[in-house]
Length: 399
Image 1 (cartoon, one colour):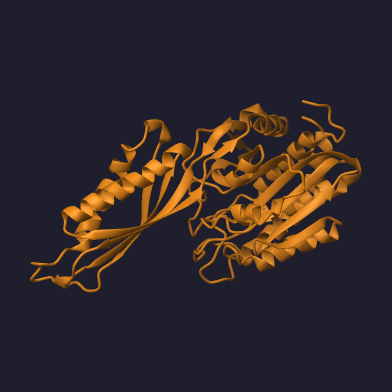
Image 2 (tube, rainbow, N blue to C red):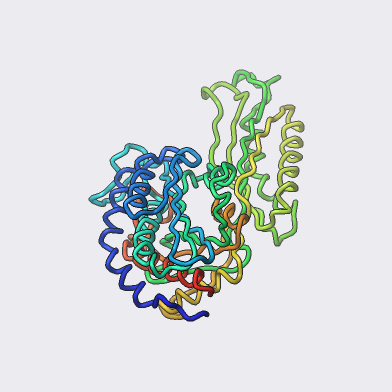
């Protein structure tokens, strides 16, 4: 790794000095959550901070996205740092003083922490601009939760002409204890596609079902057999995973339902297999529905591609985390079937998306992501800030 002109210890101390402010910003955003493409208040906080720091700011990118450009004193590489801003449609049940003030909306995935960390990263790196080489592009992205905000920003041309060469992003995660980092080079997170299947039968009286076609019975066969059918559609290495998340059908206990709607996701670890999975779903739905005398309609939406980490960029993050935390606190993880639209940025340029432990080490407190009782260990914000900024400086200095 190249010799740094900005020492690790200096970055560590600067980050420590920003910790209280990072927590304050995170709690403020947590109390005022906003859904995807509606993050106006959150975006305003980020844009205001960047502007105060003398960073060039672009707002309204893909509706609510914010991009900041910080040029160092000398020319060099250009690095993108990304945070997602959106919350989830959940009623918060966590017992915290700064709980959501918005009914039915909460930050249950740590995006409030990601945003606060990137704001503090901008503060820290702006303090170093007179010794900073190259350019840092701060990206506050809307709509990560199934809405593809990253792709929307890219498609809008937000990064054309900026000369971005690499990207870093992180996710706070309660599955790992605070004070740890988890990562993996190569394929790390699965692709995800979304589907909506409409099962069509023929309604009738529950006491006289002759002539009717029960859409609920067809749907039951789909639910019980779809996973196994798709698992056999591609090679085992593709690891297909199907989840049916919603079922809606029927109008009364004594009526044979004529329509059932199923919604869900299809994930895999092989992008080339995604078309085959779609075709296999079509064939299975047609077979099951036709055999029962019904029919179907399928809306299938391509979601996020597989997230693939660049080996060199992952090595920079790994070594940085080891220097800050110790080798025993940095883990190489197995690929996860969770998905992330950071994958679009990593298709644009090489980079690394890594996990920062945010758990308490207590099962009574470590609720899973997307739980209405989700809470973060806020000490993880400091770890995230230190690792992100140190890795960024090292990349810019030629690591």
